[in-house]
Length: 135
Image 1 (cartoon, rainbow, N blue to C red):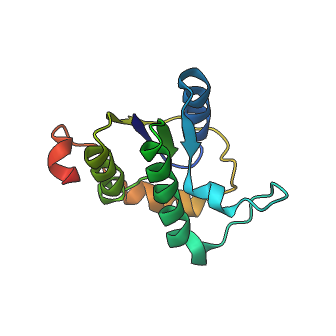
Image 2 (cartoon, one colour; image 1 turned 120 degrees about the vertical axis):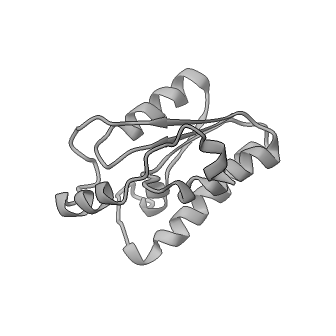
């Protein structure tokens, strides 16, 4: 199974993913994990965001190939960002689901409010006929 959790920073994505990880024995991944150094400190580098997302998708693929289940929590503000995960789920023949978080909690990565506002402006709502948009 592959579950995608989307939402703005501070919406509860990581909290829900950790809950699913414990309850369903799923691997929890998010692109932000790429920026955690060996000492466990988060050190974001905007120049490496593409590499972080590529890493997250590759780790998802590797887990699914081993018959594992994965929950990926990222902002996924636009639907095209979900497409590679949906395509992977289809290719691997695994169940695919999207959860959306809308809470308002302190964000753990200190994303500035101005950046969250920009993300909110480019937010794509999930359409009723989602499969049409994920092809």
